[in-house]
Length: 94
Image 1: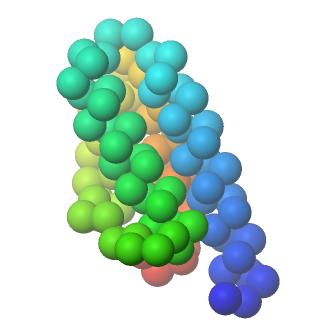
Image 2: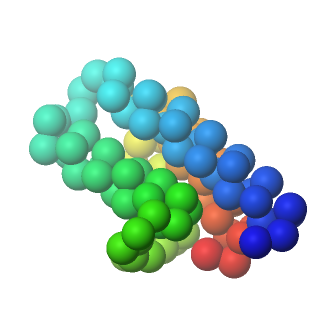
């Protein structure tokens, strides 16, 4: 991986960390919804880390954008992090 790609991955991982913290503290999310979204965040993180057995997540940037729209009014900080993540992943060609 070249330096630009490595920097992009590091930025995406940082945003994923921020998003995880926002979601963990977000009120108004059912436990089921929170668990599902956090699992998706972890899947993306594992794939970006390139860990053994990492499988590209099924979520697409379009579905991440949809999730951000769902969170926009009730969880604006999480929506902002999702939008940042979508932009970073798109810039990486993902």
